Every structure is written in structure tokens, then in C-alpha cells.
Length: 182
Length: 124
Image (cartoon, rainbow over all chains, first blue to last red; front, side, top):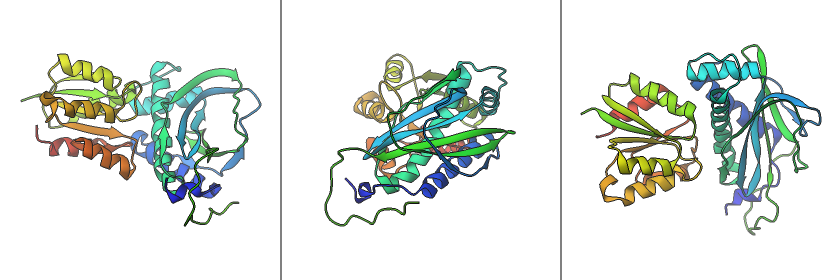
């Protein structure tokens, strides 16, 4: 147990900046795409039906949560095409696998940064969903912090919902002050 | 002598990308085998000749660190070069992989140059 696990909340700016760095690094290095980050926003899991490609990865440790990316089917095909140097006209297994791996890299690199503040986190295997008019539900009461990226003329959203695990052990002593909360 | 390479990653996309990078290196390659997790990789090692392994860490069934532990526990494979290529970038994971006997560590996202450099530094 590290002292960092005593933090109760993460600063939204810290989260969104880490998401931006991770996304731009992965997209620049693996895809050669210059994505442009927009303004971060907070949301609950959207109550209205969604469509397109959504990929999700769980994080667990002293803190728990989920990170993921969402975009249109067309953008998923474009990004996967750049990743694998191929052309995709529709979403298939290769596109879903590529989107899962890109999400793994983005959320994995976000995790590597945020671990300095919340302690070690494990990552789940990515889950990728493609469909129309699906509705997502989440048991968490917490907001998702989302960052939209302008990418190849479309919008890709990267988001994270992370909070302290309930019933985590309490360590007494020199806990650092909690992070600034907006 | 041309190398027989085993790529271990649950992502077919990454296996495809690494195949492409291998084809661009100066290291002579005889053939490339693929496995989707550590368990499948161990089965391939038992039946196929392999001279280099490129392995992810986060995988289903058997992860890369468990796979590495199994490899190093086997007298026949204890000197087999195993390069970890993974999103896991914490110092703790890098140290753990080194202690378990990883030959090298490359963080995702990677460039082809980074992989080529690592491969060039390995003694086969």
C-alpha cells in the first residue's frame, strides 16, 4: 500500500491532460495521425442510444474504473487502416481488434501516468462493441471525464471513470494532502 | 543463422505489425510463428524450434510474465531471448520482467526503429 492510495479524488485537469498525452502519443507514433484535443467535459454514461464503435478497458487496484474510446464506424475503419496499412470499408474482426489494441495503448499509457497518484493499477483485456442504437449502463455514480479529439475530420472521444475502491485499507501516517478538486 | 521468431500477443493487429517490422530488419528471419497467449506459446515452444520470442504482458489465459517464468524454469529455454513488448510501463513491471529474465523491454506505442534497435542488440 502506498501513500498515494490515500487520495480521495483526482483533479479533472490532471486526468484530461494524461488522457491527451496518452492519446496523442499513441496516435502520432502508431498511426501518424495528428489528432487535435478539444475541451474536456464530464458526463454520466449517455442515457440515449449510441452507435458506432466503443472499446472499454477495466482498471483495478486501490482505485477502480474503466477507460475507453468511442467513434463512428467510418473513423474506426480509417484508423484501423492506418494502423495495419490496409483498407477497410466496413467494421470487421480486424477493425475491432485494432480498435481494442489502440484503446489498450491509450488507456495503458494513461494508467502508467496516473499510477503515480493512485498507486498500481491492473488492466483488463479490452472489450470492443460495434452496433447501432445500443444503450450502456454503469453501476457507478461517478462522472466520466471525456476528451474529444478532432481526428481525420471526425470526432473520437476518449473517456475515463476512476474512483477509490470501496473498503480499501486505510494507512495512517504521512498521507499527502488530497489533490485539488475542481 | 536465420531466426525462427515467435510473436506472443492477444492482438492480431500487433502480431501483424510486428511481422512487418521483422521483415524490415537486418536480422535474418527464417519464419515467424504466432501465439495469442502464454499458454499457446508454451505449447508451440514444446514442438517448434524457436530462436527469439517477442511477447506482450497483458494477455488472457496466461500473461507474459507467467509465460516468461515458465520459459526460464525450463533448462532448454533458459537462454532463449525473450523481448517484452507491452503497454505496461511502470518501473515496477519493468523491474519484475528483468528479474524474471526478460532480455529486453519495449513500451507500446513503439516505432519500428525501437524494435530494430532492440533486435540488433540481442545476442542470438
